[in-house]
Length: 249
Image 1 (tube, rainbow, N blue to C red):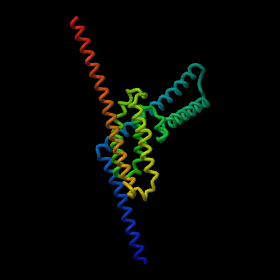
Image 2 (cartoon, rainbow, N blue to C red):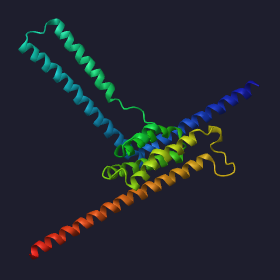
Image 3 (tube, rainbow, N blue to C red):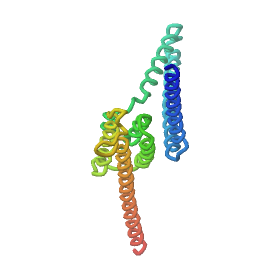
Image 4 (cartoon, one colour):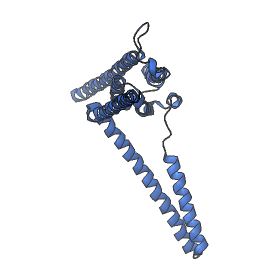
């Protein structure tokens, strides 16, 4: 009986190590894949830019407090020990408020729905990356591809009217339908996600749904690019006709 328990414990330990190795391999795959590297680089750049903004605000607070102290000293007189302590307390409060206000709140589907269109792709990407660890390997890989599509789509959405049909179509896809797909999968018990009952398993349905989403994002991006190219061609044609006519005159 003791030997059986020991063998069972050893088997569980082996399975646990295999699961850990699999997770490590997935993390490594994300880092070395083109999509993973691109998303990781974009995340580092966003973090760096946010850090620069916070640093500038902290130095600005210091400059304002120092300027106020100098102005007080020149106009009224020495600030004294109490004035010095008041300046330090003011600076600490200002830094606390700046740091607290600079923290990015966790993205949720509710926040995505309320997001402005130009910010929606990056915020959706941040939410997707937070969901990634809980997804199966094929779905996680697809999430990386969707993240790249969202990066491509972001500058295109910044130039269109949010009331246009394609803008509303994009919003519905990435702010409603995509979160609904992943949340629906997360509600399925883990023990049933690989079970095929009266159709594909939830794991396969998730992968198929994400594939559709990625394809739709590619199509929307191509449609927006086609519209931009058409506008550019029309503008170029207008300039050619205008200046040719002016030259003829």
